[in-house]
Image (tube, rainbow, N blue to C red; front, side, top):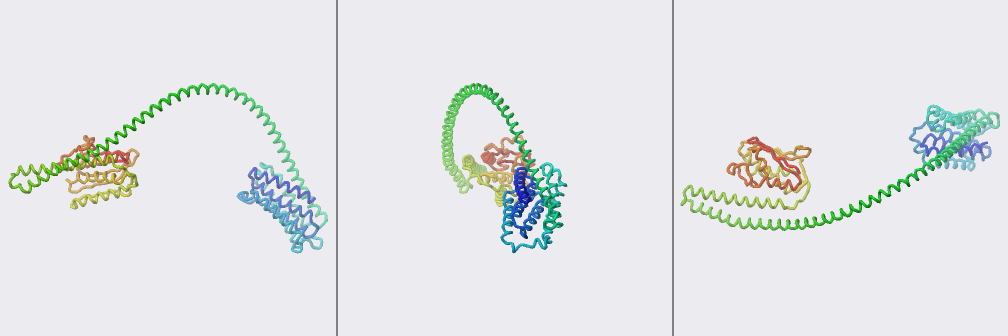
Length: 498
């Protein structure tokens, strides 16, 4: 009887373990562990001689089975551990180890039988196991939806039989009627389990038969689809052949177009080489002209200075005025030459991109401007933390000219405010330099960035008209744009993006 129950329990546990892995059911796995431990221990119990070890193996089987049966009360998170394959092997190994230990070390075992009756220790183990089985039954009853869905509701009846068998163990003596009664209860429980196994096997068999029948229908349907697909393939093949002919024509046309593009690229490369050579010649010409022009200019300025210093007493006021004008014109001509060279250098200078602190550059330029005329009352407001990616030297040229213009065009005011900051313009960040100086007529704003074009007289504000042209060249080389807003005597704001 015990051997039959052990075999049924182990077989049931293996089937439930497979169900638990397929259906991800933690409660299924825990019930499987209960039957596995109980089945292995009952197998050793069935092969043992009567005695303390014989009763201990049975009592341990009841207690271990009850414990794992009642463990379905534990949180579902425990299922992640129970579902792992190594856990079942660990439980099985522990049960086998205990089963081997029991007959080998009988002298170390507790007393389980005394005077023909079971000891208190044996009664407690069996009664506790029975109560745990009944606790598991209570869990099945309170979560009937899950157990009905998985087909495990029958185990409520199994748990009741095993629970009553464990509790009635304490009311029996060896070989009396009560002793046979709880054995029959356990046998009935294993018969129910066996019925569950056969029922499960029958459902699986019917499912397999239904699956086979369904596969046959699918096979017939696939055959029909295959025939239809063959017809479609033939039609598509004809279309593809026609498309291939069109593609061949298109490839021929594209090849001709690629040849034309290749020739155009070669021509473009040739023109680019010619342009680079022309730029180099132009640069050499600019340096040559500037050198050739500077020599006579220095002579004119030098001799005019000699006349002013050594012969001023021989000249009347008008003559001295003429000499002063000659010197001013030559100096202005020299400045124009310098500006032309700087404009040429900015256009062709190699750019080195890096992260640049525009705030730091602006503060440095402002400090230099204030040193040129410390007595002026000018309030510089420079926003902190403004950075951009670009060539540091060229970006300094931008700020030198924009802040220098603000410094120059506020010189007629006793107090002035010059601001450098950033603002959103059309969804992009734009930097700006704003002042409250002379401003300009917005009608002529288009001339601001043209080289040598000025909106103010030289006698009013000195300059050559190259500074803003430099700004535009640098900003354009950084992929941005520059524009201005202003009004006469209401100041001006110059914006630029990078």
